[in-house]
Length: 154
Figure (cartoon, rainbow, N blue to C red):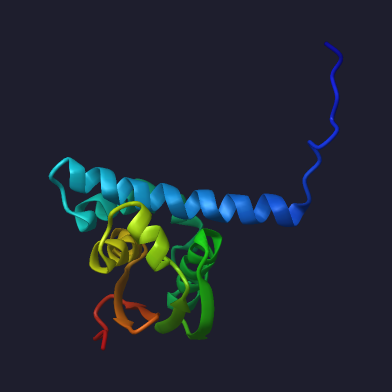
């Protein structure tokens, strides 16, 4: 059978959109799997965070804003939208929205609380970088905060 590439050419936009969907789905599937195995979504996120933490080594010593920028980029790669990103070396804050979507949570049988646990993977990464991380949901928005260890996260 002769080889053909007809229909096998994809635009960068098509590839990016597919990759975002896949990346976000893998995290949600992991959370659902953890729950099905009797583990909490937060525990699964912590394991992933500990595994990924050493890959953030290039961000060590660059401060809260540099780390938050990469955290926000990772969320955008899963489908989130960044509403705001600001800060400095000592403290940074990002407001994200749009991921995980309710229909994606429903597909994987996850509650909003279980889905939001995906943000907890940043806790061990932040600790690895000498930072502290927290998040809170306000409606559709999630506010992420990163600060130098020893600072008070509000």
